[in-house]
Amino acid sequence: MLISNIKSRPVYERLAIDGAGRRHLVLSDAPRPLGEVIDGTESAGAPLAYWVVAGTSAVDGQPQTGPAGNAAEVETRAFRAAAHLFDRLTHRLGQETVGLRLYAVGEEGFIWEVAKLARAAGLETEECRTAHAGSLRRRVFCVHCKTITEGVTTSLAACAGCGAQLVVRDHFSRSHAAFMGVQADAEAPGDLPPVEELFP
Amino acid sequence: MMAQTIALRVAAVTPLSPTLKAFTFVPAAGGLVPPSGPGAHLRLFLRDGAKLHKNAYSLIANPADRSHLSIIVRRVAASKGGSAFLHEQVGEGDVIEAGLPANLFPVTRTARRHLMVSGGIGVTPFLAYIAAFAAEGTPWQLHHFCRPDEREVFAALLAPYAGGSLHIHCDGTLDGLDAALRRQPLGTHLYTCGPESLMGAVLGQAQALGWPKVRLHSESFGGAVAGGEPFIAVLKRSGIEVAVDAETGLLDAIEAAGVEAPCLCRGGACGQCLIEVADGVPEHRDHFLDAEERASNRFIMTCVSRSRTPRLVLDL
Ligand code: FES
Image (cartoon, rainbow over all chains, first blue to last red; front, side):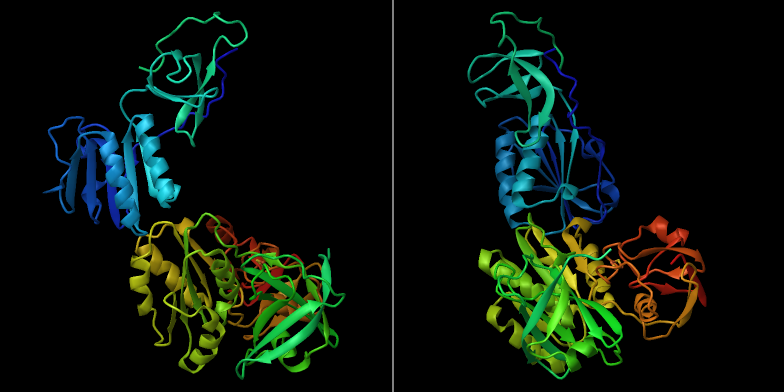
């Protein structure tokens, strides 16, 4: 059996503002209305920033301030690409103090990269919450050559590093923020199972 | 069930103030002292005539140095117990039986930085913390709160680590803490040790400023208040009644009556001293039972808790 029934795939709940936080930073890997991403912003009672990957060059990454619902002001920033957002995030976390709450919503690759940066900056899991949104496509870590192949939607995929045909397993590695991929035809070269679109 | 013990010889007794004395121990049989970590404590079995006092004290020396163990003991004003015995009757050369060092207040290994808040003699575990942090180069900050007349004593104890990270406050308020709590970089953990009231206030202030519980650590031991309303503890299995006066803790009173009771930290943290309550309502002062267990009134941690009812019937 090539696809095991290991279920280490993380389970996500809908995000809600943690009222105990003194500052909130919400990240999304695609433009989405804030209220769609997270509950409780109207009663946040603490400064809130919303950073979004716009995926277009027509944004400048500068903060825009505007009222959100009732009380708190929301500072919104749009970034050209995820890499740009991660840069700013690393910088911001380096200057932050205890009291911050971080939230990330998006595809698995995005939210796990955020979780990794948060951990590296010293945030505890309780201070960084994530939720899945968008495509189910997977980041796949080749256990043979250690290359990560992005955007895999099928049960079988060619490794971007060594070219092996990898079976995408359900085994999720938090440290690599990726699913494990194991060579499909290791025992009988060329003997491949049918390819299925599993992670649209 | 007796834990493993070692015989320690008192190598030095150093008076620090009229009520504080430092004791240094070496193994009576020679060699190295048993290993411990920052925050560990030592239980001493003090034979005072027919009485046996079992007291725990935080170790203050750098745990990496295994040549000796050191503690500081405050003589409690109305004490008839271990601290008075140590102050009055223990001198250099005496041999004392002790348990192996145990740690109920360890340093969080994943923390990037450590913020410590102590009150009075509650600074003792932090002396070992700071020695370890200084040796490893881990960033730290200590806010110590004490009475003005003891400022010099604590300043002298902390002098080897004096510098920007050390703040001694004697104004009787926690005002000096607010700015520090607001300014800690991500990755900081907070530890507090001292009287219940101080620790409660520190933890409350930190939570109000957005510190999640995982970053907060407290050690009640050494700071726990024994006193309260007097009551009668009825020991069902031993068939005796023990009068617990306003000054004495329940566990101490049980032991003074000659009944063996389980215990370890004597500070409401470890859970060892849990006893079932057959009748009466306990006044819970521990950090061990959860809300449900408390509400059920079926258990009591004898080391710190007392009784709300005039009689408390224990399964002991
Ligand atoms: S002896 Fe540790 S909780 Fe009572």
